[in-house]
Length: 446
Image (cartoon, rainbow, N blue to C red; front, side, top):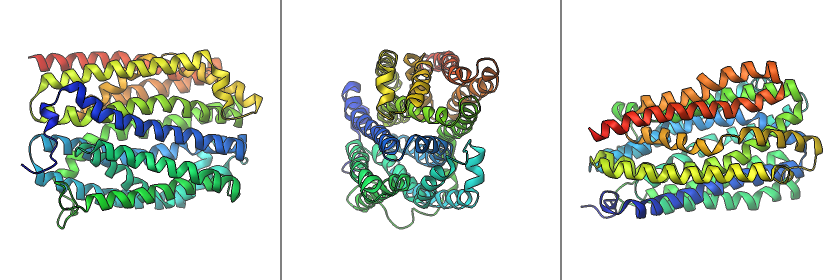
């Protein structure tokens, strides 16, 4: 048996495995989310309230970019875990090469197309003449480094799935640390403003990507870069994309959602209302990213054991992660409902922007304790090669429920209708998740 193959995924206690895999992922996701928050703090205090609004305008493009990254990265990582569970190491190596090739192709095409039409796209996303310069300056630099971003996230996903969750954690943490050092230097010292924040992001990912490539060049590791693995294989591409289509759909739908949110807030409250959504988004993502860390830790364990036909262990992992995720989201709910003004004041001293943010925080976090269950269930279906269920869950929350609510409620309640659309959609999507998961668990038992 090859040295380093994570056979403990099939034999180690579930609780110990989750601590081993989930904690590094949680720390990495929390660090990434804290970077996003500090990034917004530097922009809010160093550039101004309108710059925060410009940053919020860029969210749809960031979500769409993330959608393509997860399409290949998450799908390949889940497929890799399953193949390792089946002891198919040759295919696992080919998956590594194919995910690199796919990300280079998609990353180049995405950047090229968006850069050509960047300003019209940003106007469509809700930019005004005041916020467009900030959004365009930020996105141009991010798009120039888009291929680096894609490869960084894809290789980190492969690291986790190939039995190196701690290395994936440190890759993310070092990216964040480099970012936090460079951000104030570029924004304040060099006076680059919002462009400095984007430049810090690209440089930090470039440094860590170089380390990832060096790690996977080690021929003693059972998954490593080698000749013959980069040519795209139809079966691997198809299987990876079929699994990754669920998180892709979620992120692509999020792009449409953020456009509707920004436009609704702009029409009912102005540029500062859009900036308030930027604050709400950053805070909510802190807790969402922690749950994503749980999910990333769960995914290789579930995928491996599902591939090895150990269904009892699969169910045991699921139950523990749902419990943990619910606890985190309940904590987020409590913090925001008890201290909304203090949370908003972290980002800005502008009173109008603070008032908008407080209202948004209280509304958006209304059903937060329930969201963890929905998120874990969606990742669970991805991990056991059930993309149809995962896609349906993504569509119900992001498209079937939220988009109609965003189009209807603002006509009756104005800006509050925009905010309330999100928690109502969350509540309805949890009901769908309960129904689908109950059916799947019955299949396991039979």
